[in-house]
Length: 315
Ligand code: ADP
Ligand code: MG
Image: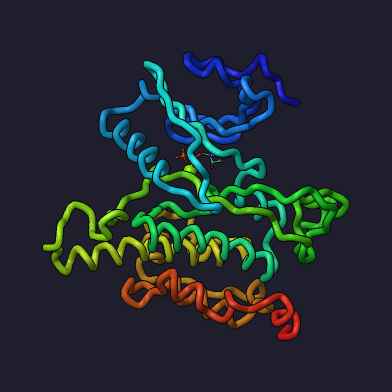
């Protein structure tokens, strides 16, 4: 399946063998690659087409790398190294062989409450580290930027029955990564392309100020963190039912719905999902950022603290 001769060659990347394309973006391709010096170490390489970018866009790539350099958390994709040639930037990253969480949602239709909790708690741990330890807001949390490192492959059926009409969508005998035993594996947040440093983790003060911080700056900082919390609400909603809380074919209508916080727990899809999960989502999809849950409040919510047994007992 993997055709190596079709892989592009990049100057300065001779140390790596590109194995397959894993994803792409506006200015980049991401490849799975093998280190020829160690024979087996696999990485992900984000090849960014520098020559297509203006100076502002280039500066943003360097900022993305600088932010990642300072992060160290099991639920955040690690930066291995960074280099560049005349035309390209090469961002060498820890490989997430499972790919995007997004594909798993499409594949399974939706996740059980236990599996959704298992996923969102890992995302939350990464966000807690970013917000409370590193002074970083991610600003682009979505299923495409949530990758995973699968637990060993275990034969498993879909955790919930397939919906009517989708009967032939998933072969029951198919091997799914770890689902049903130890969850899906380790979730890792990727793509710090839109991230921002809000405060200096060394001095613990808001960025660029030294003790004369105005209240609106302190408020701004809180607002920017709440952006990630809203996005987490959207992700959790999508995990549990398989479709996003806000959708419309018209961008204008969609924007209006988001601005008003117009969403519902649509029947019949939400009928069997616990009130506790719905309560948590409603505290995230709160239009007023002052009232929206912080990461600390999120992690203290009963639905997050619930164990598998309690969920089963309540059902
Ligand atoms: P962009 O800013 O263009 O969205 P991303 O960093 O999100 O760039 O990478 C684009 C896609 O490449 C991701 O959505 C994912 O599918 C894949 N990808 C990125 N990093 C990795 C990685 N470390 N391991 C596996 N796949 C990755
Ligand atoms: Mg991305």
